[in-house]
Image (tube, rainbow, N blue to C red; front, side, top):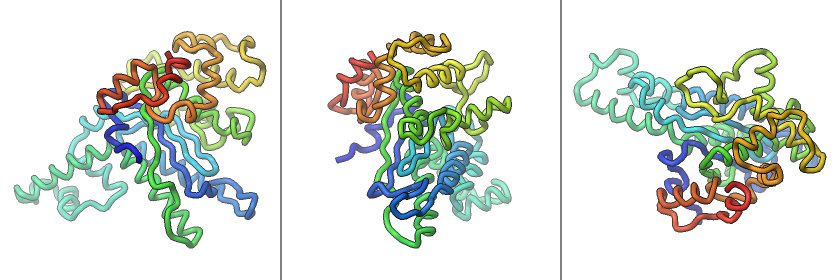
Length: 324
C-alpha cells in the first residue's frame, strides 16, 4: 500500500524531490507509436509549457525535467520561504492563474478590501492561507500538471478514463550527492533510451534548455539557477553549471571507467561531492532501481525516517555502497 504523502515529503529536512508520472498500461504519452503509426510528439510541448507556467506561479523551482515517451521526470525544489513573503494579493493572483476563485475573492481583487464586510475579509484571509500552502505543495503542482495533460490527451483521443497511473511517485532527495545524481539521471534519460547521443540533442530536457540558453547568453527563465558568485538571495543549485555540464559529458563517454576526462571539472565535481567515478556511473544509470524511496547517505536516510515517522529505510545498503 502506498505511503501517505506526509511520510514522503518533509520540507524541514529537504526541499528537493524527484517526481515521476507514468501513463497507464505504458501507453504512449509522446513520440511516435510504431505499432499504430500515431504520432504524439506534439504533446511534449504541452507538458513543457505547463511545467514552465506552474514554476512561474508556484513557490516551486524546476531543477531538472525530462519528457519521455510514456513518463515524465521532474526534480523540484520547494521554496517555502518565498511563498511566505508574498502579499495576500500576490497569492490570490497566482492561484487565479489556474482556478476561478470564489466570488468573494473576485470582488476583493476587483474592488479592494474596503468593499468587503469584516466577515468577508476574514474569509478572504482564510482562503489566502489555504492557497499559500497549496502553492508550496508538490501534490498540487503535480495535480495541476497531470490533470491538464490527461484532459487534453483524452479529448484528443476521444476517450475517457485514467491517462496516468493513479499516483505520481515522489522521493525525497536528501543531500548534494543524491541531488547531483538524480539530476544527471533525469537529464541523461534520452541518451540512455538511445533517443539521441548528445546533450544538445536531448529534446525536452532541462539540459538542452540550459545549453541553448547559454549559447544565447541568457538565463533559462523557468529553471532554478546553478550556484554563481553573485550574492543572489534566491536559492541556487549547490554546484556550478559548467562543472555539471562537464561531468555529464564525461558520463556519456562510452570508454571504460577510469578514462581521462577531457575537462578536469568533471572529476573536480565528483571530488567535491565525495563520489567515485564507478559509483557515479552506477547511480546515474540506475537511480530508480537503486532508490525506491528517499535518496541520500545512510545518515540522511535515518534523519528523514525519524522526522517522518517511518519505521524503515528502504535501500539503505545501496546508500552505504554508493553515496556514503
